[in-house]
Image (cartoon, rainbow, N blue to C red; front, side, top):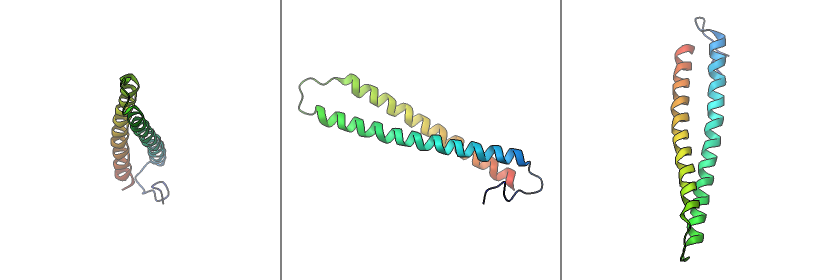
Length: 95
C-alpha cells in the first residue's frame, strides 16, 4: 500500500503523490545506471582479456570504458542518496 493510499489527516495529498512519483523515477534511473555499470564492467573485462598476449595494447578504449564506469558509479551513488532522502521525506510526511 502506498503512502497516498493510507494518507494521514495532516499530510498534503499532492506532496505525497509528487514524492511517490519522484521515488519511482529515481528507482528507474538507478536501475538503468546499474545495468550500464554491469555493461561497462563486462566490456572492460572483455577488452582486457582480448588484449592479453598482444604486444601493442591500445589503452584509449580501456580508458574510455573506465571513465564511463567511474561516471556511472558516481551517478549510482548520487541516485541512491537522492532516493534515500526522498523516502525519508515521504515517511515523515506520511506520519
